[in-house]
Image (cartoon, rainbow, N blue to C red; front, side):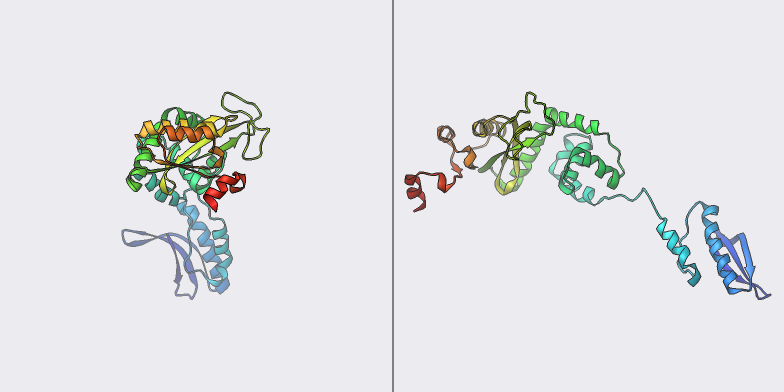
Length: 298
């Protein structure tokens, strides 16, 4: 529908609402007529208000009169919609997600949602729900995400690591270098269980139960795999087991192992030598004895 100003033979101007049907303009309603300029503009604005009622759709007047500025401002301020979605991350990161092969692991979209929100809006699982609702207009119950996380570790972890490893190998070739490090993740809940234990916290949360996370990455930081341990474990005891686990899983050909000083123990060094690993272990110069300092740094 549209509005027409029709000049009459009497000199007055009629404000009409018309609709185009089969190339013909059909008169729907004559709002009124007047010779007074101000009254004509008021009739025009009244027609603007009537069109949404007649069509159940709002109208945007592209050529408003000077007196209709307030009507236009009010119209714009009242615009709202739930159909505008944020699709940029889905298009960009989603393409990468699919290209690597993660979408073949499960048809459950929660995995993709978790990955995308972790990259562009990192936070808690509750933050994931808020993001999906605000930017994707998707409602997901928090318990559904928690159930998926259990399924993730028990069912999908090995497949995800396999897909990530094959993609890394495609990019860098044979895995000749492995970087290993350990961190702690604490929980606000004070209760301990078989995995969550109070231990040495790298976050300074010594009264909070925690788990220990060991991460292996290859050259350029591409992920190889991870494992989790009891929160009161000694991080040095995780090095050899995780190396052996992923060496067997991916048939690695004795890559060079690089780790920090927290994993520098005589037992680990001996076991690395026994298992024919070349290695680089970081250490603080001030903690070394005089002979070592003289040998390597003078």
